[in-house]
Image (cartoon, rainbow, N blue to C red; front, side, top):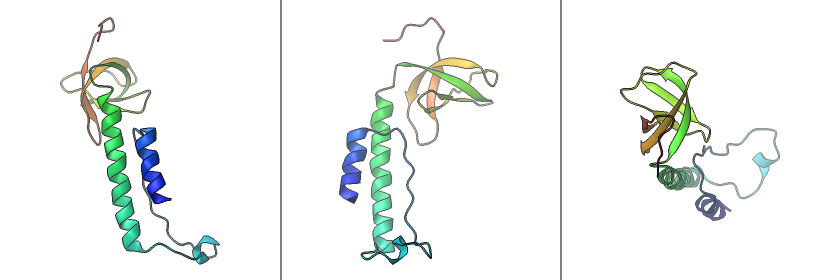
Length: 126
C-alpha cells in the first residue's frame, strides 16, 4: 500500500502534502490490529513520502515559472501573499497594502515562500 501511495503522489502531482504517522490510540480497533508497522519503518516511509511530495511540488512549481499569478497580499513588509492555488509568494523590494491584489510572475520555488516579481496589470507574459 505504501508503494501505491508513492506512485499516486507522482501520478497526481501534488503542490503540497502533509505527512503524519499513525500512532496507536488505546481503545481503538486499529491499536489491536495485527501486522503493526515498526517505528523505524514509519520513520523511513515518512522521509520517503516527504521526498516524493517535495519532488512533486518542484515539478508543479516549474510549470508556473514565467506565468502570471494573482496573489492576495497578506503581509506588507516583506510583501507576501498567496495565490488561488495556495502557492505562497514573497515579492522582495515591493510595497503593497495588506488585503490588496497583486499580479506577479514566479521566479524561483521554495519550501516556504516562492520568490516573485510584481508585474503590471496589463503585462503580457508568454
